[in-house]
Length: 278
Ligand SMILES: Nc1ncnc2c1ncn2[C@@H]1O[C@H](COP(=O)(O)OP(=O)(O)OP(=O)(O)O)[C@@H](O)[C@H]1O
Ligand SMILES: [Mg+2]
Image (cartoon, rainbow, N blue to C red; front, side, top):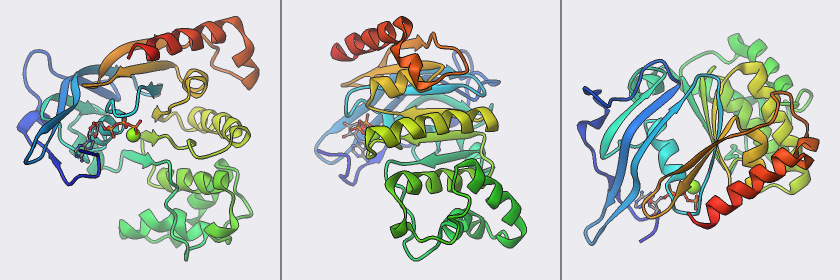
């Protein structure tokens, strides 16, 4: 059975908040005992089992874990693309559906998924058009975002004229056009070479500091998780559950040289050991 099989998660009233043990309002994301099961005619898969977590507003949380442990599934629950089978979750103190309806949550995927016939500017403006807003009226904001992601001057280029790193910058700007408060990033730099990835790691930390967003960032790279995060959430597989939550002992202002410090090296070693037994 693979993730592309047409299976749907069990729908339940789990998103209605209940009594004791409920998700806590006041955090960007708060969840208690989240379980996600997928059912097919032949069998069921428990993708996530009993996940409880609080993410404070403005936190940069990175997620590490073996393939299939439920990282993408968890992001989909936060984005209200999937209902948990049981458990409770709040996003910005309310149901995920409310956060979604308010445009408070945005997603960036590994594949930038730009429309090849639209320019950079037109790609970034697409969510405005979908929301029935006038791109022209929001042009100043679009130009600001182009600047934020380092693409000023490339607004009239087409995706096939851009490098992989530039395409991901466009997809980040497109995610930010609706002024979300929570940004979900699912292996956004996984397909890029190491040098470009390092540069984008610094960029995304700068963007995070400037926007004060809450970021959940999935990666398979121990170094990326440790460098970017305030904390690293390590999940274990079969079924996916919290294995460890590790605070990152690096200063708020970081440069890539921080990866050479003894604190970073021992954090990376701890994450590696945890992953090996997950
Ligand atoms: N729509 C679906 N139907 C059936 N099973 C699914 C579906 N989506 C996910 N799964 C299963 O749930 C489990 C978790 O999948 P998920 O994609 O969340 O893992 P992941 O941690 O993101 O993995 P990767 O690191 O490979 O991206 C896997 O066993 C997967 O096969
Ligand atoms: Mg995934």
